Length: 196
Image (cartoon, rainbow, N blue to C red):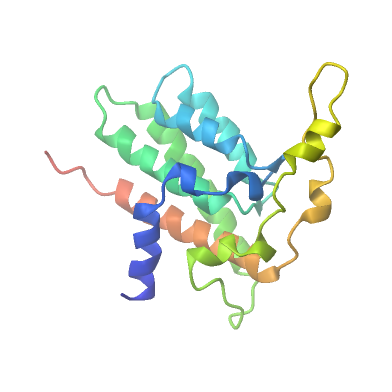
């Protein structure tokens, strides 16, 4: 199996609950809200899906920074685009918004990658994203419970920024893998649907 086949074999096989979201980074810190937003998006509920798409777009990229949660979220967002194209009744506004967002993000990734030296290499497989040095540390819920406030609630760790992985290869891979996912789905969506 060549590297392209391995790349898309992972894309086709990964399930939402197999991604360590709480250890991936998004705009607001840990990507713990992303599965809920993806579920709302894929519900295709006209009252929830558009706001979920807006929230996801803010979580996976901010000021042209693509976070470690981005390539994984884009897989599920792309699957949602496939679902929208096949749905009856059609949801043209949601499909249009998703396609437009994917194109904007593709432009960001392409621009960012143009700054890298051609000798720099992205990860050779998706599994490298899950190496300990590329993940946030696990949440210590016992420690958080010890810090409960008087109402029995606790805030998520506020110092997640101190735990950010420091890896230029990780950053490059976020852009490269996101770009490949975006290109894949945009090319697919530009093809006419074949009748069932």
